[in-house]
Image 1 (tube, rainbow, N blue to C red):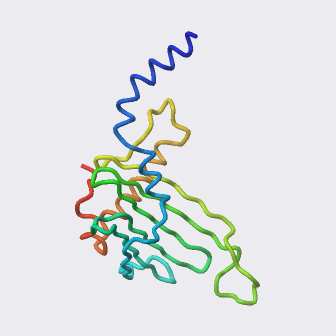
Image 2 (cartoon, one colour):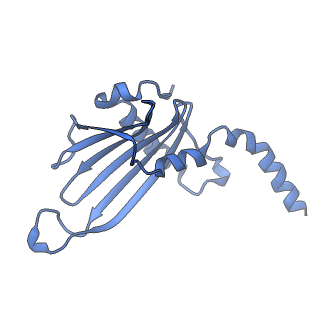
Image 3 (tube, rainbow, N blue to C red):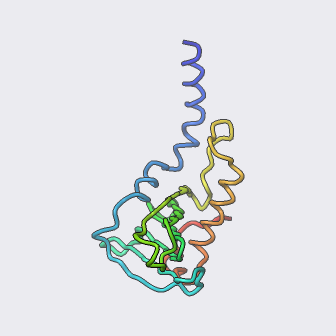
Length: 172
């Protein structure tokens, strides 16, 4: 009983601070299907792979930004960054790396497919990366914060999509 009371007190104290960033809603936006949204495609100007890259910008019927996806292809795999927006102050970025079973352009290698897919999720509120209290974290918070900051810079500072993300909250 004492343990339940202690946990309730701790959750009550942490609740308002943690509730300020709608993590669950951001995660749902990052995983929501993109079909039915207005899609615009443009080539990536700062090519980071031999196969080049593409931006896919998805907007709702009212013209507001829903998601931006950057895909960079390669012969051994591909990377994808997806930014999904709840509102200008609350958004998330999912960074996915896909590794192929074999090199993509060697037909003698037989059928190809995905060997591994790894995705990291980052949640931003007011332009700041949401981090759980260190005592409750299950990740190396320093590595997570570094990766999250890099993902945010890559999605919010790229000149190709600057006009699309200009209203989103940025870090101080």
